[in-house]
Length: 158
Image (cartoon, rainbow, N blue to C red; front, side, top):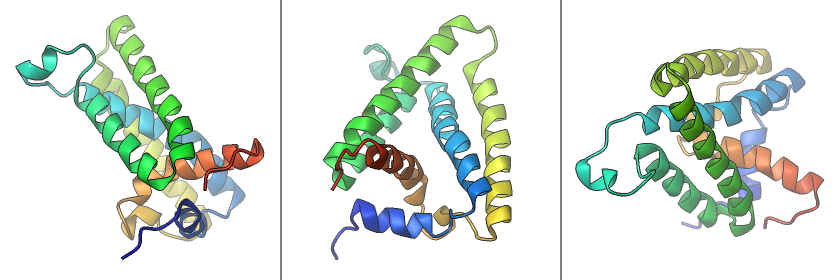
């Protein structure tokens, strides 16, 4: 079976993201959900062997795996998504050092609130979130948004 192209994924994802309110909610919530998921994973204790390498934790492992997914989807898109992911890691690392509240608590609260908004958006849209059909759509959301940015800047991603 041949892998789907970025445009095929985006077309399928976009079919349940046509309402302007749902789109706006996704523009805010999808990047922030990516961020708070990294924060949650960042907070999971790591084995001693991982602690020997600075910034190696479950959050950065998840980011590396997501980047591999994005490279397979589109090398061009993976560059923008890697910059975004590294920025998220930097934000989490900075907050983790600056805040007195554990990053996992902030991330968990954010995760719940952001998903409530996502479900409100899909209620307005009248369609279920795409990930109910295929879990890979959780990674397509950020790529779909990056695809909009690339098209606006006339950057090819095929």
